[in-house]
Image 1 (cartoon, helix red, strand yellow):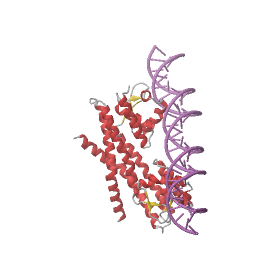
Image 2: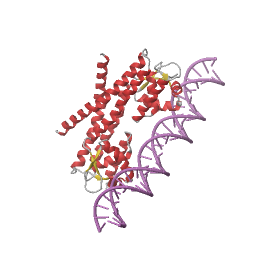
Image 3: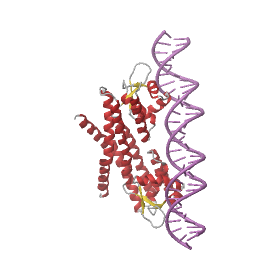
Length: 157
Length: 157
DNA sequence: ACGACCGTTCAGTGGGTTCTGAACGAACGG
DNA sequence: CCGTTCGTTCAGAACCCACTGAACGGTCGT
């Protein structure tokens, strides 16, 4: 079902995801979906191929689907087939950095706690807040835009 | 030593760091260093103020120092004083994004495993590789540049 | 209606990480 | 030279997260 080389690739993607803080199984699923044939696979097939329980695939693939990394493809019967969403990785990064935006509220709370006359702390808090806002905004729009631009120019070469 | 409001702020930063995959104590240290007076604190003082063991502070603050998030400030005697590095957050994000670059090598390995005639998988692998390379490059230069630009323009207002 | 299969959910387990307390080496002060 | 203080390191405890196996609801085929 999966050659030795493919298995190694799948495991490497798993380690890669793990190094980024995501579950290893998530990476293995994503890795296999990149190279499997056909490109859409049922949950049961994924579990069997990757030698993990259906429960694990079910719970792991949900955030992947919600995050736009994979998507369900319409199929007759009861099976749920999943496949890679082209350009989904940028959405993942976007999602990940949206969380940084929460830091802005924390910084705002900090400013409400620190007295007006404490210039040093207020300056550090303001920078912290600005950076969180900037990162969130940047990841949500500019980063994705530049990636799309880069990809089209590279594709048309 | 620390007001109720300050304590809540410190804990919020801790939760914020935790949501990003970093240890909670790291966030609490960073939060306190943002608002404490004086802005540089010894390891023992941090441990006492934050109600954690010196061991925990010692092990947690090392990666912070190596990552450029905090720095040791020269001080007479045996104490090690630490303080916030201005703009350290961008360095942290940059470091984090550098890891994404490792995905390019994984994708290259995948391309060496998948046969030449399998257009679909190869296309997905190529996009994966390009995205990793793009992100690494972008984070290393463009992101930091834009942040510096944003900060100066905002500061001059 | 019944059996078979698909996906979801739940309690329990195992591996990994963060924390603590104690022991240690090093450096200053009396 | 001795006691104190500072930071580091180690083994062990506590905790968290991902994974498993089993039970369940739902749907198709017969």
